Structure formats: C-alpha cells, structure tokens
Length: 334
Image (tube, rainbow, N blue to C red; front, side, top):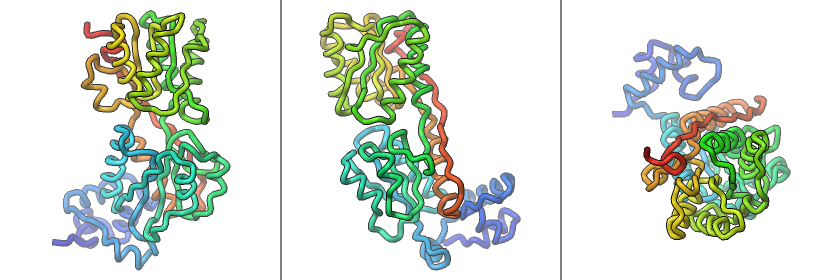
C-alpha cells in the first residue's frame, strides 16, 4: 500500500507542513523534529510522489552524478552510497561517466539534456576552475574533489593535504627515510594536494625527497602503479617507502615488488589512498588513507538539496575527515 504524507505526519506527531519541510530538506526545522519525522519515514517506508512534486514545485525528482569512471572501486562505492542516500531522501540518482575527457566534462557544464534533473554532483578532472565558473547551465551544482573548484561554488572533498602529511609522518615514525611518491600529474588538483602534504612532512623531518623518487603518471590504474614501482626499483637509490596516490596503484606496486623479489614491507613499505575493499583483503593487506565516505555523501547531498531549495544561499566548501588504516604493507603481520 502507498504510504501518504498524512500518515507520516500522524506517526511523527507533527503537522503535514512540518513533515513536508523535513522531506524537502528545508533548513529551519529543529533537529529533534527532523529526527522524529525521519524515524516515521523509515518505519512506514514512505517514498515521495515524484510526479506530484514536479507538478507542485517544478522539480523532477532526479539528481545526476558525473564521475570520470565507474570501473574504479572508489567511484563505484561512492556512486552506490550516493544513490542509496539520495533515494532515502526522495530522489533518484542518474549516472554519467565523463572518462576524464575534456569535451565530456564540458558537456556536463553546458547542461545535461534530461529536463527532470534537479541538481548535479560533478567530479571534474579535465576542465579548469575558469571553465567551471563560466558554465551556462543554471541547475544547482556541487563539486567533488580538488580540481576545477571556483571559490563561489559548493564543493566537498577529502582533506588530501592533511591525509598525505599523515602518511609521511607514519612512514617516518616506523623508521623509513628514503621516501617516494607515485601519482604526480600535469593537472593541478588532488594529486598536487597529496604531493604537497607528503612533501611538507618530509621537509619538516629534515629528510630529502629525491627528484627521481617523485613519479609522474598518466593514469591511476594497477598497471600505472606497477610501472612506476619498476622505475623506482631500477633507479640508483631504491626507496624504502612508497606512497601511491590511490589504492589501485599501490596494489600494482606491491605486485611489481613481488615479481622483482623485493619484500613488502621488509624492504619497501607501501601506502595507498581510498581504502577500497581489495586492499583490505590483499596480501599483504594495504595500509591506506580511509576517507569518511558517510560524511562525504551526507555533505554532498545536504549541500545540493539546500542549493535546490535556495539558489541564493552562500556557497560552502567542506573538507571531510580521514583515518590512516595501518596494515601489513607498512608494519608486517607481527
């Protein structure tokens, strides 16, 4: 049976107007009231009538997520969590892959063709901040990551700089001194923030980061990580610790070490970033930065729905927290 808004209001002990305000994410609702209404929604299995919403508010009930790729475990998990939470808040999530292609990302900025899309979540890699600022689409937008972020736009990102400082501090604490970084790109953004934080901690410790120990990549795959690791192993000074800017490259690096007869972590400690499931079950299990994905998903949707409700509100730029998950690839299994 279809659950009506009136039933939600009665279960929560509030007016239909208050229940509607909670469902439509109006900001001026007391937290205790919002919690009561949400509990009633969950208990009754209420789902908003998207057609009625469109007629009443001029909204379609759809959000769009544009990411570089979905074969990346990180983006796949993020998309799944965003979809589930958007659905819980009464929206359906549509997915678009840009493949980090400049023309594809410009199409996102120009405006997706589906007229029922109320807002867009966009993780840009190829376009610049200037191109984002000059977008012609007027639909509400929240940006993900640290690439192409104008100051007057909503965005949510992991604190890549702080997390990468934490990686370097961990490696130094366990006695590593010949540190290396894999993942520098020509484009500014997340990679620059991760290299910056990593370098800052190394400099503060009085350790030299050799230029040949900073490896450029064109992609963030297992193959890219393996190729970078082979370059490091063939160099004149072999590093004793390597920070890869995502988990897939770190897993590729571990494989390259295994093939070369180099022990992880005894000879080389390896750290990744993202905390994908594969890293947790890899041998050795992967030390990595674990972003707070629950907080990221909540902040992204909260900002986007607030922007849909009020186009004139001041932009917010949010950094979510992280934890360093220390596992066998840096400390062994002892």
